[in-house]
Image (cartoon, rainbow, N blue to C red; front, side, top):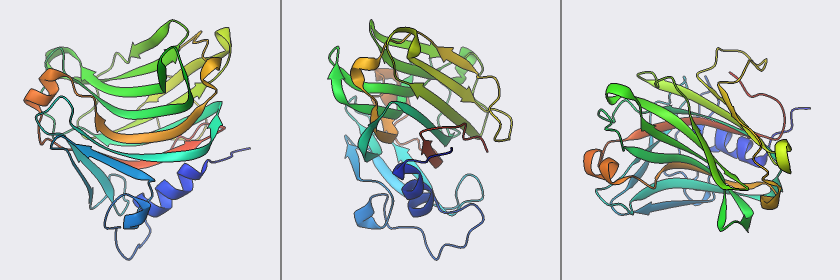
Length: 248
């Protein structure tokens, strides 16, 4: 059964539109109060959050996020879900073309999955960050809360120029039952392929499950805020589900 969380219907219909659809107009802003999909938005420290056209995949609209030259700068949207989801899948498109070459310690968070319950001093069950690869390239790092603090893994292939598709599956459970599986630029199709990577043995049952989703830029490293202020990252086609591979 392919059960979709409410985040999916709101994000795909309300904010990003149907692929190939003829929406009359994009919303004035990303929140429900502005005609968009998301519960709230956070814009701090010179950040900018905007709806742009066209989208990244024959869609009507995209979400654009950029930060100011401040370590506390943020520009992201959040959707708060009513329940804690012990099985959580997410997918989004991200285009980092406007970001100039990365230095070794460049990093910025692009996605977060908070939990209702705080454990080990943390309430974020997972994060996805853009980090530096070799020779100025950009790569994606997955960070999951685990019994020992945080467990992370950087995918060892550079992001491509243009649009990248990122998908993840977080399973909540004791011991080896807790794990994060991810796919980066997997081949098209809705049959689940071999993952790009897995972070195993998270022992993350104490958090209960994901209860919200945040998309956009936050938590920049000092080199990122120094080198990439006002450089926009674009997002599209956010999708979240309880079960089954999302694909495309």
